[in-house]
Amino acid sequence: MISGFSSAPIPPSGIVWGSAPKNFGRSAIANLCLWGASFFIIFGVAARLLYHAPNFVPIGALALWVGVYLPKRYGFFLPIAVMLISDFFIGFYDWRLMMVVYASFAIIAPIGWIIRKNKSASNILLASLSGSVIFFITTNFAVWYLSNWYAHTPSGLLLSYTMAIPFFRNSLLADLFYNASFFSVYELALAIRAKKFNGVFARLTS
Picture 1 (cartoon, rainbow, N blue to C red):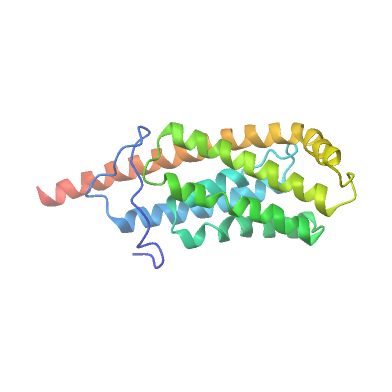
Picture 2: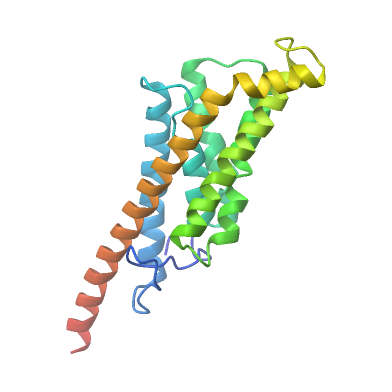
């Protein structure tokens, strides 16, 4: 058993989002969660460092995945860790805006807590859209409020959101794409692992 993962909820197995086989032990799930988290962290950092369309990054999807599958105490830490590591290489900026951006990703994790017991495709879609909207609203409000880029008036705020629509489109598409990819790949890996585990279990008990 990996320390710190014993309380992790048993994820469903199979792309149909069913229940994990009862013989599929928590230690196997903990190992898969750990490998999945490690992969997604490395992937998230690499995706930010490599060339990409503006805002087309997997951080929001990573935050949702962490919220769904890992213990709650990791939900806030891992997305922020990805941002800190990648920003170390990209370059830091206004710390106030950075805190808002980091917090916007971190608060996506609790959305995952809400749907972790019912990971239906529709719930994941709704959670993905919610995360995109939260990031759009909070970060662009912060840009308007904390910077001098826009007049501090209602029309300035409206302009801030209007100018950010192309970036919101990219964030929305990225969250949809990466959430579909992350959840499908992880569920498939879980199903394969569970099938293999049950095959060994059946041979040992036959």
